[in-house]
Length: 75
Image (cartoon, rainbow, N blue to C red):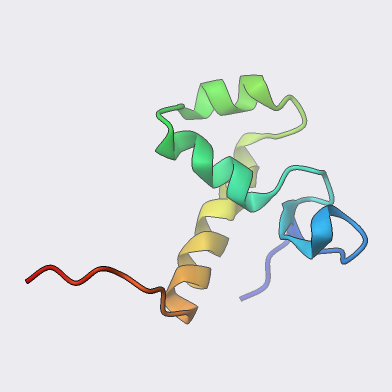
């Protein structure tokens, strides 16, 4: 899958995936709804973003599918 709005530059933000070359990381954007912010609040907090930057969600979904994370197993 190719992402048009996700970039990674080793010279910027330590190479973390960002939105369109901005200094706004995918992780930052994903943390916002997890903290209870809705789309309007996120767009208001980061005026450089627009609704099409929801590609961060698709990118994150694929990233999680591609790696195993250590999880606590419930008995």
